[in-house]
Image (cartoon, rainbow, N blue to C red; front, side, top):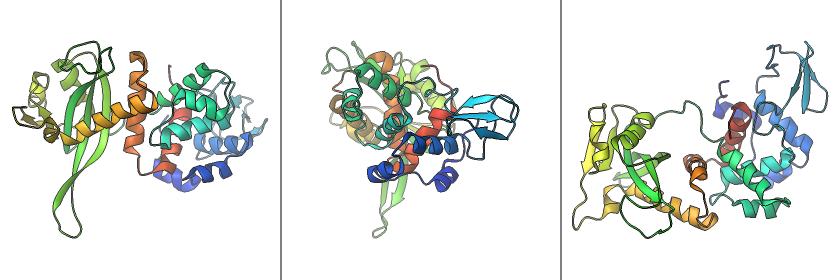
Length: 314
């Protein structure tokens, strides 16, 4: 099912822009049901079984029966279906992950919402994280910095591309702009992509570029051999070999800043206690929030839309 246009949907639903607006907007389960119904059926109810557009509510907005007699749950086919937690609790989970700059840990979430079990809090947050990748999202383009880094491991101070760590490759758009007063050219970070990869081979690193970056783009990397095939793949490959006296952060400043902030977030909010099998979901959370860092209201709405309109295996 195609996702609705996020700008148009935000104009119609006017999502909350702050915690105060959120608290005033969503006080009861009924408030959440009505909002979720409009998110799932922005153009009116359509039965998922027979496509008929006529139906009536049997239990508020939680259960709808179409004119052909099919009963449809508001949460059917989504990660919310079958949950023992109320929609208000789920809405808070989406809000915290989509809009809070440091995110929230499962332990903090458990305490803030008064959940009895840590495992419940963790699973709820993980389901939200695993929902945050937009299907068929637009490729990065124009000019992109790409590099890789290790995260975690038994020895966090160990250098190099080896060791007991998880390798993550990242790509970030570099967008030029001119300062209004001086007209001097500057650069700022655009959209971000992060992915766990098995190794630093060409299949992993160049494969990431080929899947996430539009051919023809200028791709900046260091001198690692894993990127050598990019020119053959249709990219304008700008390699900068790291040498003595050259500060590595000056070579690829934007992606290195992302890696630094990513590690600080994982260590600060989550104390570095992330199992490798869950790391990609945390990377997706960081990417989602980074790419929408200036739009908290639409970010909450977009995350909720992805949760209810995309099927997941978690």
